[in-house]
Image (cartoon, rainbow, N blue to C red):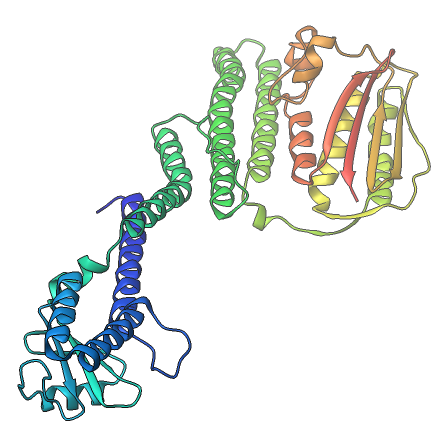
Length: 434
């Protein structure tokens, strides 16, 4: 049997049949000593036959004893029924059974093998008589098996079937989900309705499958985006190189080559950062991060860039907030959000940065007073390489990975990153568990 269901059901049924057979045979083959007030049914039958045989012998002699023993043989389907005195003399035939009686005294409570069958013995209370019952071993079990035993066995088998199905059904469903996932259906998941170890196994598979699906989807998307993003600067590099070789406006073409090379270098740096975010979580640093100090340092660092664009950064005095995390990832996330706000903030405007702490959550709010984002673009603002339709010109911005990196860094800290139009401007909120 290769099926786990068949193995479980088979072992359960085998255990039940063995238990039932042992119970029947134990009830039939053993009997308590006469001093015990509780006797098994077969022991009670032996006591009754002993009493009737004694009464028949003492009241009617051999004819009455012969009639009683014949009746016992017919009722019990016994091979022989023998009634002897204390010395082993058969009171009906006069034969000597001293060895049989002696062996019966030695075995006391249990049957023994004798005269070609299984022999049961019962002595009278005063020790004057011995009643011997010799039965065929093959008929011993069948004669004690009752229809009620079969009914109990059937009910027990049904319960075993239900238990085996309960144990193996989730494994079969999990096996089907694994097969579907292995054949490329990345949406395949196992049911998690149960709360026991089977449910925990299904949950572990679903988490693994979700992680694999995320990695494979991200890899495919990244390959497509990289091929698209690299095609344009490489094409412009080729054109610039050809123009430089022809001697036409060589200096300007070299400047263009420099710009495109810088752009490719920036793209590679952002891709490496995304690869780090998608890497093994065990390899990430985890330390105590003072978020208020981190934001203060970022505001000082970004103020120069803001002043160069004619705007300013306004930091609301933050409360002391500390959490456990990767300081570099958090710095990149908040810095990318700030730089994005600076890039789209109009001249002579301000970018508001605030840190709040409450209910076990730290909230970083960054708001600019620029044109905002179309409502339909908000759900895609944190997608890799996504750019608002009105800002498709690459010369006006980065490579479209800054907010995606910020979103992934925040998600790795079990936080959330949201964007909404503040009318005017865009409000980006970073929420992290403290």
